[in-house]
Image (cartoon, rainbow, N blue to C red; front, side, top):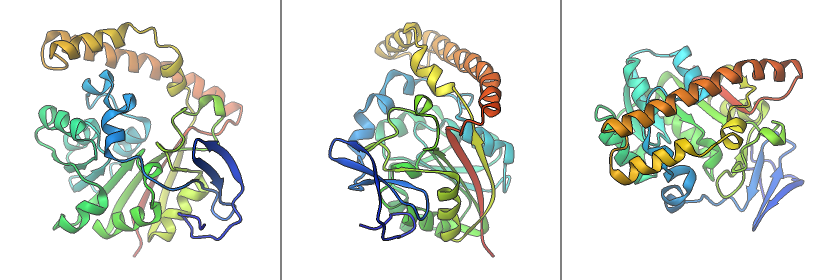
Length: 300
């Protein structure tokens, strides 16, 4: 066994077990990784409730994750060609297009991409992995983004190298990953194999990017209870409305679906407002963050 991130030879202490998967810690680079390193595959993402539940039908560029918002705040290479890996239904891809980028999106889930093509027709979507796309790209990109993707891939070092090869000289790579040092109560229960094959810290993320040919410009850590609130304070009303709109075929296209989407955006804004003082309190308690965001640039 060797570390899939730094190539170290161990020993690797076991930290958790999830069915046939054992999660190990690499003392050399501070990453946690699964044994075996086997990706869940296309069927998992097209069938699992997290990726095909009713919430996925109500997409909007106003419903972005924290790491995606951080990227749009940084906005490197404005107006450039951007490749968004793991784009899902395309809400970030559309937000980036509106910010002036020329956007291409990749994802394994065909159902998510079909939704994105209907909602955001000005974005070019492709149902393939980064490794499959790279030989067909026929171009270089100014920016590659991978938000909540790196933890899903079985060969993370190869993923970083592939992103590097697709970038123009001095191009940018933006990454967002869950942070394994977060308090257990705040971590997502699905931050485990087969969904997530690696878990990251600031040190392991920076090390992986530097070994992959990047200079890291900044790393941000998000102290948040947003995901915790979203999981534990669901009253079910919005989800029932989403299911009803989905069954009627009006999700996001007619007034009932548009109203549900509006409620979803309002709920997200309320939770985000609550999250600001909660994050400040976590900072005072020196709690580790739940998400890491890194912006890197190709080395000279």
